[in-house]
Image (cartoon, rainbow, N blue to C red):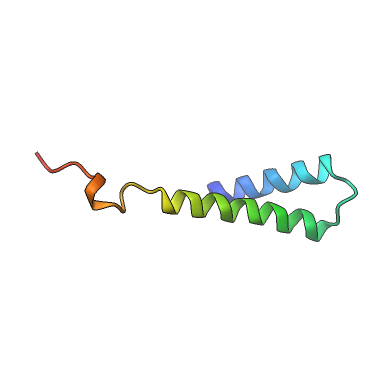
Length: 57
């Protein structure tokens, strides 16, 4: 749900600041930003890395 809100915010901001862009361009650029954010969060996730976890006490 978080990424949907980000997508909608990016799409509405892009349509406001760039009215000359087509709807497809606005939606694809917003989608590309959300995908880039999701990939960055996926690859920097420390819970996937077992060496970054603390040993149990």
